[in-house]
Length: 129
Image (cartoon, rainbow, N blue to C red; front, top):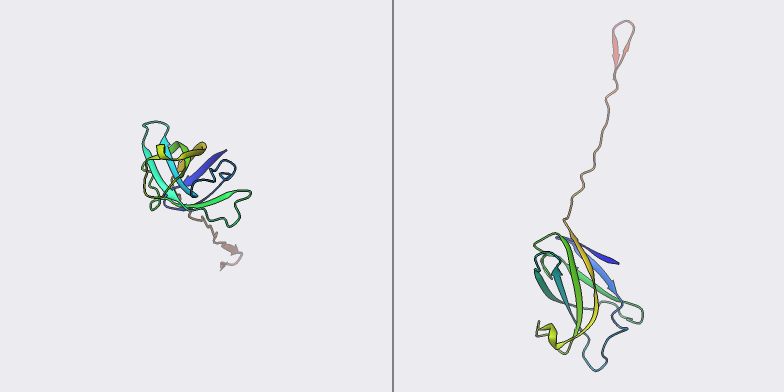
């Protein structure tokens, strides 16, 4: 399954990380996003918001604040359980998830409204609008 991230938006991500977590480490999640073409790399820590992680872990990613994707398109994501939250050296952590992300531009939809003006000409020269 591909995760969809919209630029300049709050993105909710649900993953099943608890299945592979190392119980001897703190539960600190480092996300690594690597652009499939060009190999741009983005690293960020995200906090698990789910109170009960028995089924899934829930994260908010505010694009432009938590992570900034300068290019649209496809990325590979990897999630690491880290021993502490200070380092972005993912080799110190345990990889618990890998998958695909698609970053799309935020599009503002402007509703298109059309109100036709009806004009009827009645015999005798009267006009009704």
